[in-house]
Amino acid sequence: MIGLFTNRKREKLRATPAPGEWLTILERNFPIFRRLSAEDRRELLGHVQVFLAEKHFEGCGGLELTDEIRVTLAAQACLLLLHRDTDYYPNLTSVLVYPTGYVADDTRYLGGGLWEEGPEDRLGHTAHNLRALVLAWDAARHGAMHPGDGENVVLHEFAHQLDFENRSADGTPELETRAEYLSWARVMSAEFERLRRSIPYDYDAVLDIYGAQNPTEFFAVATEAFFERPRALRKKHGELYEALMRFFRQDPATFSAEDEAE
Ligand SMILES: [Zn+2]
Image (cartoon, rainbow, N blue to C red; front, side, top):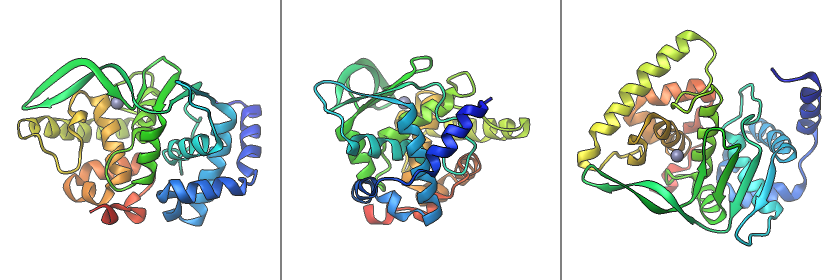
């Protein structure tokens, strides 16, 4: 339940015109922004105002935060909120930004059906109950600037945050009805199994094999593909595309940049 006071404050923030500099930053760094309808661009900028007012940003590893960093990250995070009732990632307090990838323990896919646990160059991270989300600025900027390559660390990590909103990290975000949960479970488990079965061949044309680890990673990887390679996803994984379209209330195939990447 969102309080009346919070709601009013957010409405006021959403109605505040974005500084011209933000538009210059987004036109340059985030080609998806250019491709959205005028109405969606306005909605996105309103969400960015709320996001930047409510979340604490921290530069790590010597990184000095700038408006370019804050706005480029916030706009990608808020793309996932368009057209939906949102409480702006309520489980998240802080966004920690490193200049570049940092080493942490992670699971890595080696190929041939093998996974390895160990130190890994990581580009982003968040976890249930952590209240923080960590990003490498160079990777986040690259992801924003190349919207058709299927990889976007910001969309990936914020999809995890949406997953946490229904209490558990299980690859299922908050849905409205029991029928939607049933339909989601049916489609997602079938598509997850399909990706797992593709492991011996090390190949899925659209979905990153990293998503075969567990349903949580599957949802994050599917979200990246949904926004970055929507036409390919719709063609190869039609039911998955439709399930994500119902949840996100968007049809990214209409603003896809994937042709430019091919
Ligand atoms: Zn992940």
